[in-house]
Image (cartoon, rainbow, N blue to C red; front, side, top):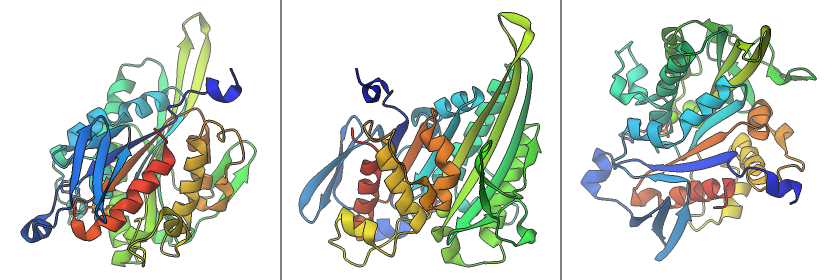
Amino acid sequence: GTEASDEPDDHINVVLRVRPLNMQELTRRDVFHSSFPGSGTIEVDHNSSMRSFTYNVVFEPEATQEDLFDHSGVRKLVDMAMNGYACTALAFGQTGSGKTHTMTGPPQQFQDGKQIDPKMYGLIQRSLFYLFKQLEQQSGSKRIRASYLEIYNEQVIDLLNANHGKYLQVRWSKNRGFYVENLFLVECETVDDLMVVLEEGMRNRQTGSHGLNEFSSRSHSMLTLTIDSEQTDPDDENLAITKRGKLTFVDLAGIEKVKDSNSTAESLFESNNINKSLLVLGNCIASLGDAKKRHGHIPYRDSKLTKLLADSLGGNGVTLMVACITPSSHQVSETMNTLRYASRAKKI
Ligand code: ADP
Ligand code: MG
């Protein structure tokens, strides 16, 4: 066959999570009409017509944090990252749809040094525990380093060196590809070291000098683990096999309200309300998800976010996209935008 048809079609997986109604929404009973006819499909009543969307998996409001970890395919990302691939999990959706809850657990838990309930751990913590469990069973040496940054308004901020207060530059080199200059890297020997990194970054994200509430809804946060391992070649004990994999978790800026509630997909992507990186990411993912375009020009250079994700998105690793929506009827047009953004990523 052609080159394109030999390409495995599972570089990008898209799952959908519908959060439960919150107290306020429950009291107002403002749930929109939707149904789950099975096998990754959701049907949504929008302007009196039923629209159907299909993804790899659809998680209904009852799904637990554990269900997300067990059935979203994130384990595969960890396994591949341990084997030298670059893999990425991204959460997207409007503000309040549950992106942070899904990735890191309820955002409130990072305030005031509270003890975090392990039952509420998100995809990140569960992946970190899983990674270390797997690494323990592996012989040979390994080295894990973590970085945590935020992109706001096309500026990169280090979440592990927040007092530094400077914007960091994104550079490119032949050996490294795109990278962030002077980014803090933390060596992590245990899973607890990584948990400390996560908590530190989350606190800095919430209480940084910027202090604005809208900040976290307009910024992307990116936690990256670099996993180096060295093992003896099973066929020759004098040879070592070295591997460098990368595992990245991104909590994306909100896909927000557009002025026109009857907006089409086109107007969302033309809208000034959509953050530039989100727009470019959507374009990159749409091309990468299309086997015919995957080997063509992908516009990574058009935003900081996509520059930094270029090796993960375009490599042989796997990208998991978690679309988050609310079932509130007041938000159905934003929900439609998220569903369309998710559908662009993968034609199933
Ligand atoms: P986002 O990061 O998309 O802005 P959050 O993760 O902050 O949204 O979620 C908004 C609120 O809803 C938070 O208080 C969060 O704990 C709660 N929430 C989100 N998803 C769920 C869920 N699946 N189950 C229970 N509460 C949730
Ligand atoms: Mg959030």
